[in-house]
Length: 202
Image (cartoon, rainbow, N blue to C red):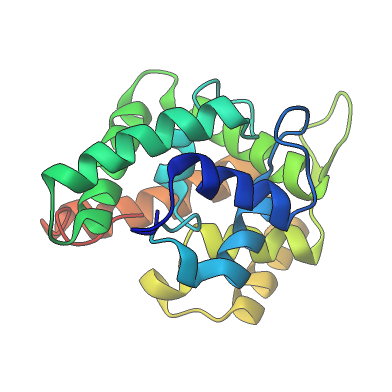
């Protein structure tokens, strides 16, 4: 949140930018990414960060309401006060560590994958067929996944290369669950395995 901007103003601006009512409407991933794209100068938080999104979504419903953002911004401001330098990266490292702990739980991988499906379904309306594990993704879905997982940062792959990989996954009938978890684990192991959690995070 910017120095001259209160928490309430920050949240209300997100709703205003997306032409939504903060008292009635929920925010989805595309709303947050849209705000980040066009209003970046007015704040200092990154929404294209998977672990932070998981942290913000308290009920793990795949969308965000005003209460989620109020609670999160309150904590983020306190984190900023205690960590004057590089506070954003330190917060992301903290969120990533909590995310990693969830992954290590007995049902952690399943819970996170299900949450991610809800996250992208709420945002772009992916199709999940009844009685089947098959999921249909549009190009907009795939681009959001690419952005939030920061694939380019960790693998150097372009969005077109990532989309071709998705196509191959579909052709080979590879379960989305295993595909997504393999990407998440790859990124986390790159971070944690190199002892760079204080500097980098997913």
